[in-house]
Amino acid sequence: MNRSHEVEYCNLELRFDRRQIQNLIRELIQEGYSLYWNENDHQFIVSVRTGRKLLKLRFLRVLGRYKLVGDYLVKDEKLAQWIEKLINNSRGHAVVKRFHDHQVLRIENIMFGEIIRLVEVSGMEHRIIFQKRPQVTIEDMVQAFKSKRAEQRAGVLRLEIDYELAVLHEAIVNGHTEAIEESKTKLKGMRTEMLLLEL
Image (cartoon, rainbow, N blue to C red; front, side, top):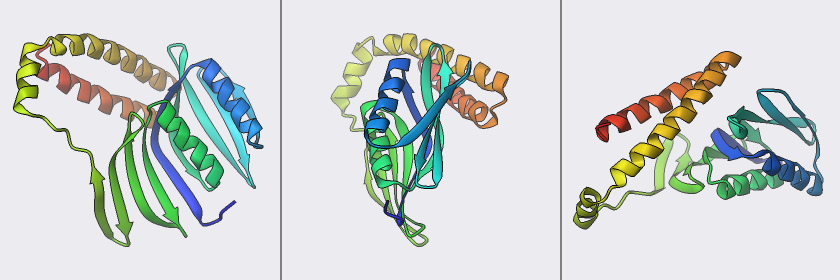
């Protein structure tokens, strides 16, 4: 294990079904990790031993599927690479902070498995190395007005709101304060989008 290697995964959000979690456990065992897992009505926890530390990966049960959520500090390079592969393959979201000797070197914002913003940190200085910008042309705008994309998005948005309301309900029932606030923030954004779509 490289002691100077640290990666923190913040606001991690990856979605899985039960079979995929079983495959993840199998992969970790094949990689030589010692681990155990337990499950209740609300979550599936996989505890992975890395040296003296125990990393608990928390999968919340939401509508028959599972969502890996939370913030995780990983000091094992191989395990960090495995988590990044998961983020990519599941098209997940995360803010990734890379440390060296306890100093943040880089911050990556990842959405749908793709880096949308990369910031280099040097002391108090922050420098944006890369930021993905939406490229909208006049032709795109004309196409948007002609298409029925707004109606299609409206249908999808209603399903997303239903899902997020279920997540919020589960968080309230379990008393997960952070998850409640996160869900409320998402719902506010969805409400704004609904207003923009004139629903």
